[in-house]
Length: 337
Image 1 (cartoon, rainbow, N blue to C red):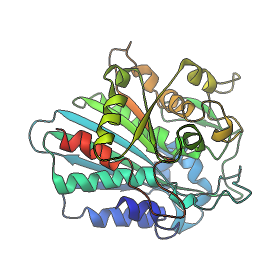
Image 2: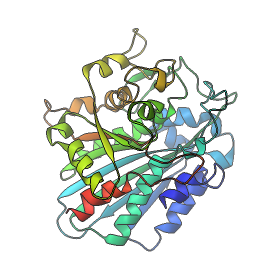
Image 3: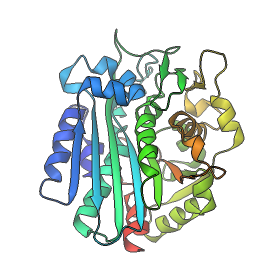
Image 4: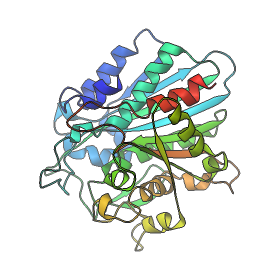
C-alpha cells in the first residue's frame, strides 16, 4: 500500500483517487476511514492546508482530501499513536517553482502519507492488542497558477498563530501543521499519547545524513523518554535505519516572527539544502504553529511529539519506494509489544 500510494504517478494517486483507494483497501476491516473533501470544511478546520490547496482546487481531479484513519486493538488501551503524514501528490514548488529540472520525481512527495496508510494496513492484518492508532493523511497538490498561495501571505493557523509565508516550496509543513494541532487537541483525552509527523520534508535531510537514512527529532517530552534512541534501535532489527537529530533553541528563534505582523515565519526564501539546520528548523515550526509549544515538559499536560523526515530513506528516483519507516514502526509498536 505504501509503494502503491507513494510511487504511483500524480494522476493515479491524485488526492480524490487516493482517498477512494484507501477506502477500498480498508473496507470490511477493523480500520475506520473518514474522508474530508468539502472546501468550506478544509478552510475552516485546516487553513494552512487550504492555502496550499487553493490553486489545485480549481481542477476537480486535483482537489485536496484529508483522510482520517483509526484502529483500536482489543483489550484496555495502553498506548495511543497519533500520526500525521505529508501527502503532496505533486510538488511544483508553487509560486517558488522548482526550476532547472528539479521538479521531476515530485510525485514521490506523498510518501509520508503513504507510510501512515501502510502502517494501518499492518495493523489491519496483525491486529495488535491494547494499541490505539489515529492517523491523518494530508493529500494535497502544490500547484502553480493564478490562484496559488505566495510568499508574504499571512495565514492564521488552526492554533491561532499568524504565519507569514516565506517560500511556497515549504508546503509540507503547511499541510501537516493544522492536522497536528487537531491531534494535539485530541491527545489530551487519550491514553499515553505520542504524536508524530512523517514526511519527505527536506533536501537538507539528504545533505546532512545521506540518501539511505530516516531522521527522527523529539520534543522535550519525547526526548525525556529516549524515544529517538528507541526508534533507532527498533530500526536496526530489520534494517530500517535511523539517525537521531536534535531540535535546538536556535531552531525556534529562526521561526519567530520578524515584525509585528506575524507570530511565525514559515520559512526563509532559500531551499532547505542551502539553509543551516534545514531539517531541524521545520520541527520547531510544526511545534510552534500547532500550539504544541504549550505542551512541553514544563506544562501541566506534556505531550510527546516526534518529527520523522524520510526524504532520504523513502527511496531513489527513478526507482521503487523503500517503505521506510514502516519496518521500524512495526518492530517498535507491534513486534516488541
